[in-house]
Length: 307
Ligand code: 3EB
Image 1: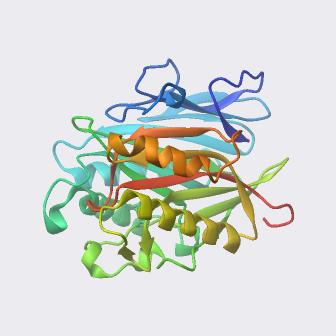
Image 2: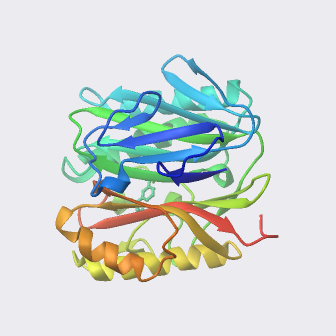
């Protein structure tokens, strides 16, 4: 299974589809996170084998024999900690009850992610609700999935979607970065619960699901607000993660940019380093720390024999 852009017509069934800046029937639609170019309007996850769909309460899903893609949304207007907690409880239940207990990756989209001061910042409150739900789950620390937490300009909806599997993945961490669950207190009362990457042995090829990656070394943000240097640092982090996973090459990437004005420059920097065939989606979004200007994530193909 791998994500492809919408232009790649294919007969393979769709496991998941994400639409940006447009509404597409059956797709997960992202409000308040516009694409930065026309090619970035859609991301499609195709797979082999029959796909069925359904829902459990507020969680909608599509699944094949080995993978389940689920999504849900809730208002954060009232109590954002409680909204996060209940979405996570619902997604854990959906994955577990349907026989896909191994969470591989979770994407979170939060309205006003940098709003609020100190521990009251929306992202830190989200981390509280998430940590509480993980604590009550049966998941051990080694089983934290790969993750993304990004800010949107939607008015109040929290959107979360995830990939879960019948088979466990293998967590991969980044030697250049402190493991997120071990971040010190300054980043909030409850640490972020995610792994830097998750390797998964697919049928045809093993993939590495790479978490949102930014200009963070150790646990500290680097390079002020300078987007070019932040890009270089982020790229070094991606390289280090892939190296630690035993070698991996990008299959599809997403780039989140805080400022629209940085798009041409970042695109140029990325194109210098990337095979032109790799689809890239560029999105206008906020990053979970106010000083971070960009974040990159993606799906990589692991060097055979790794996972
Ligand atoms: C970081 O490395 C940057 O809270 O789920 C990246 C990926 C980040 C996932 C999350 C946060 C999350 O800490 C932010």
